[in-house]
Length: 423
Ligand code: ASP
Image 1 (cartoon, rainbow, N blue to C red):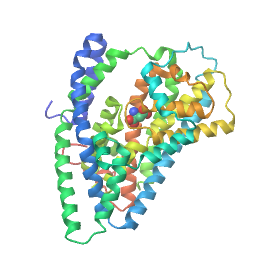
Image 2: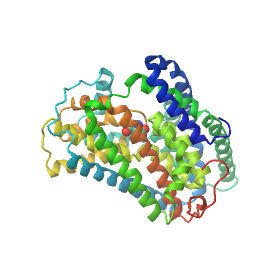
Image 3: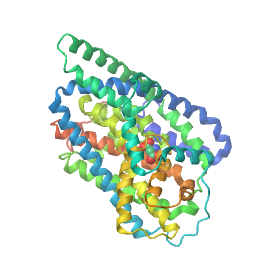
Image 4: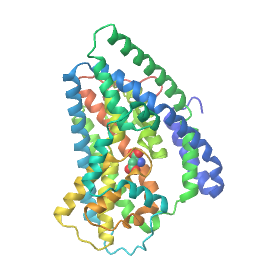
């Protein structure tokens, strides 16, 4: 497949995997190790890549004013886009009413899921959110790195990068140079691993099709369609609109092409964190965003900016209420909106994180936790789609913020030139 561009290779692999899963059934599990190897390789590079990238990026931003401005813009983007997504979901679920009058035999959550839910629910929803904030500060940054605690690593690296700018030369230039060198090496390694994406995607998707089959949609069709419609509106209308308007003329189509490999990988892995190396690579190499911006916006985004998850949380909670015949007042729906936002911030960028966090919302509005059992069957496919939207939103954020900081991004302009190979 050498001469073919990477995103086409991934797409072909994805289609072949669906065919293999459908034709071979359980036998397609034979390909699972290919997916596992790829995921392990991605996970291997996340901590050093994110660490060196954040420190290098922040050290380049320089003093307090620059980082304050960038931070404000970034958080404003995260919050507003997630709220847009939730409101689209809320409107659709009220309009379509997928749970109204639905006769769905309750399926109990699996034991593993029940345990994970228990872990996430420690009393009141606010305590849960407070818990997320407290957990951001590592007692030992090296332990955080060993355990892959992304928020803790990000916080420590942000501080470390910032204080590099506060020491005089030669310390500053030595330290900044050391991290820059590490970052360049990690990018090279990332490029290398990305070459194997088509093989990894093939393994992951073949396994998915073999285990859950394609027929899971039957029972929960309308609910799944509501979530998918919401995700589609957000991904194809809201975010492109923002790209064009707030990004001052950026072509959404060109940006989509630039991000194709990362989006297909997000779809196949259901993990924003695992996709992060590809997201960073595509945003920098294909879209042309500087490392100074991408290293700040993307790692943070992969952990806390989840528009797709936020939308899904809202629709799923409302669906469960409808299915139980519970009418949620305007006030309670408002609580659902706020909780969906907070939960999407707190959810980790890993598969099924959103499903596990549902328990926080259900508790907040007093719905039975067994409701999670209702939506279990279609969660995998919805997870793939919402993760793709999460990554798409992160990448749009990086572009919009880069434009607001005066970066030309000529490759993404309607009249812009193509880059070598990728987009
Ligand atoms: N899998 C999603 C992600 O990694 C999180 C979720 O479960 O909603 O972005």
